[in-house]
Length: 130
Image (cartoon, rainbow, N blue to C red):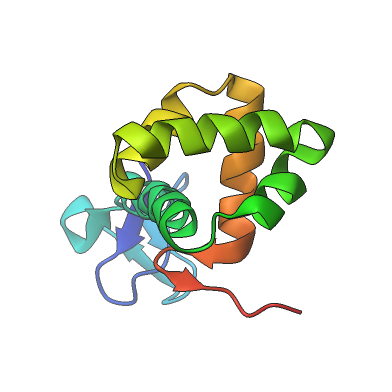
């Protein structure tokens, strides 16, 4: 069943089991017909979160990526990844290098890099450091 919201207050409605109404809004304490509800958008929040992760990655790579960050992300293997980054930057701009670098990483290393990017950036804004 798709999730629906009350058209009056916006709260999630529940399926009415006892009366001749299909829905009930616990916030308004009212039984509702379908036309008094609206379908809850499922992907709006998920799409926003995905966009935020992508933005965090690119802004991190464009503005914060350096030898120190490489060491934080890749630990003792950082020199290998730093050289890979420098090699890509020789033939591409830093903007294109961010894409190429990501594409050449394993799934595990991509996860490490994206997790760090999301720790440092929230979309296009740098998070405050502790």
